[in-house]
Image (cartoon, rainbow, N blue to C red; front, side):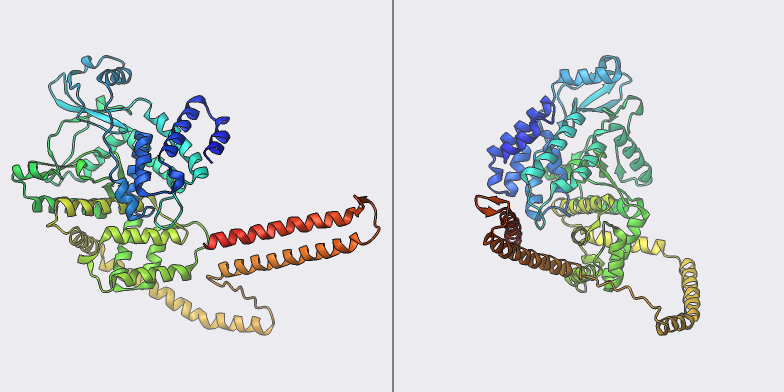
Length: 539
């Protein structure tokens, strides 16, 4: 299969792409991926393929609606740190972006990188006016490298089936475009600057939340200059203990702020791992705001409906709320969706707000949407990922604080804030008026239906919900029976013709008989292949 992939692709790409494809195939051979896929093998392959694939693996590992728990846990071990660029390369990038030497703008740049990731690396620096800043410098050609790798990955997935399409295992081919869109957000540093400023505006009244200020004059799509802020990563327990930090207080501040980002702002950090959350002077410092998620007012209202329906155990309302979260990509089997929602609600029993695991609930809702052919909005999938990560962070770094309780409190406050007696009364009035109007029209409509029925003009359109699959199976079975009958008729007819002296002949056999045998052979082969495929699918 590897030779087939190489043979099909070699003539349709440039030299650099062909060379990269050859490297990918070599890695797949080395890791013996075709002999069987395991979480460890997938992680090793992504690490071997370099920074682009490491980044993709990190993004995919945070998609609860696509990956099983085993794959997610293994891919979170992907190393984000990569070999840093040389300082000479950094100088060249700054020179190209500013069209002048860095010494004209900065009085000092630390030659050693603070951190080096797959897309960029960060250096401490000092401006000419004495301000201490950090410079985030994008790796040269990273956009072209990532776009080329993703194009090659699409080809490789289609032929090599790198990840099986089974329950809980991600199908990279179906989500690669979404991953690319997320990656492009992180590549555009001006967009990250916009995110920081929007985040700052939304959190300006919270004295316990800090964020770096952006230097707009010096920021470009490939260079981001921000104020230098010192702090301690949230998972550095020894350093935090040495500073005497009250982790329960910090955990509560973090939880309240993150819940506010989701419920009130609809603009939240989509990658809240401990490396992006620091503690500084008893406050939370948010970093790396390149990957941000958004929840529209509609999405937030739909999620509130889901929670209320879950607590009140209203299956019908839950089904309608789940439908409102996504966009059907075809005909929805409402009977199956109702059953899936009912099974989901039965798992929670009489659970109240305080014991509700929002991340797990979101993951299950995403699974219900996906299995019922309903497209998942990007904002909601990022919300699920962010909450799952935050739940893990809180459990590891601030176990005294229950994120579910904070989330429940935030939902209650939000529901009270958005509840308006006047608007509810007006809505009840409108609904009551429409009900009365339809009730008055009902006798007239029934009379019309009876008259049309008696005169033979009534037409009934019957839609058997959930019956499509059985009908399709019956249709395929009948087709096979017809094919078998035709094949038998051709064989009998051809055999009869062969006993006659009909001309023209081939090797003393009537030509029409030979053609009948060939047609019967083709139909029988097709029928046998169809039966074999069906048996394989069942296994």
